[in-house]
Image (cartoon, rainbow, N blue to C red; front, side, top):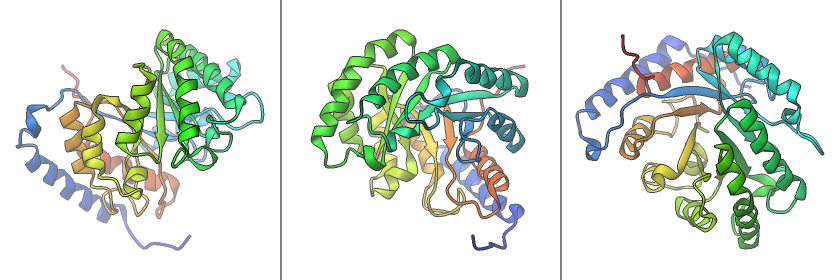
Length: 295
């Protein structure tokens, strides 16, 4: 990686300017739909090099975050997080570090597609039980790589059929399955409408959708309550210095009443992994503050 001569003080000056801009913007009514409460900021365990590793919680705490998105891991048969002992280690470490597990993620579906591989179908069903046992409410289902649904109507039909079949189990467990893909808001809405279950929603990654050329600020408003959780990401630079306008993301979230997790999935790490994540988190907190606790 090419060395970048940059300081956190200089970077945080940009964050302060973004915060000032948001403060001015907040004088506007945002369609009279501003939401109460605050945000939690987490990180994908793979971003900090601790995939399916309870040590990710200690690293995230050191960075100054609220929690971690935990990947199920990779395997040819049973995924690592299916192991009850590993689940307990995560829960014990979360309690020890006073951290939270924001959500779970099945990144393995990028290589072993849900649309075509029977193992993936079984993993999602078993994953719901894991999430329920761990007290986690959201599972990200990834549809990239081999699992891409673009220009694959037959693959979409299989996904709809399988998710319709598993939706009742997810509803009963109180678990939401979040579809993350390259598809547009309207394409996601079509899939969710066909499944007809509140347990299947959209996991929205602002950078992925921006990369596809979608108007992410309008897409957030269009999807509204169908969004179960967000990935905060920027393919171009550290947050606030790249192509994602996070104050506009916040404005769109205000319009749909979203308050919850923003899970950082880092791509640019000019300061090193931990320091880059720390900068990104500090920048995001100027725009997405935590809920104020009453005295």
